[in-house]
Image (cartoon, rainbow, N blue to C red; front, side, top):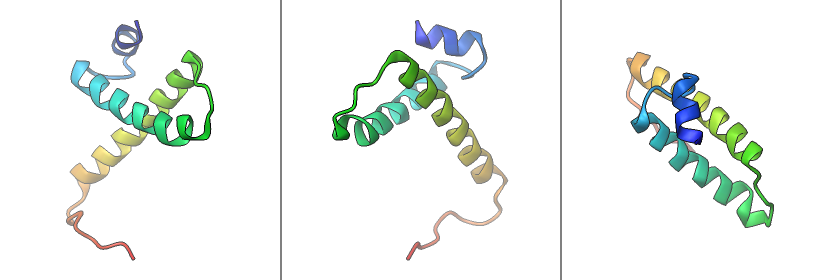
Length: 75
């Protein structure tokens, strides 16, 4: 249901991107909601998945357009 909606509306391009988005969405839900004892509605899942899609696309665009390496240290 959610996969077909995301593909049909253009939120994700294909099943591969949907899988990547849902894996990241699941991680966000586990860390930010489940660990705090919050329940997650389908509306919450949808909003988190859309935000995750946008974040992943920004990261991909940065990586593809960046001429520098991503091997920088964070201190």
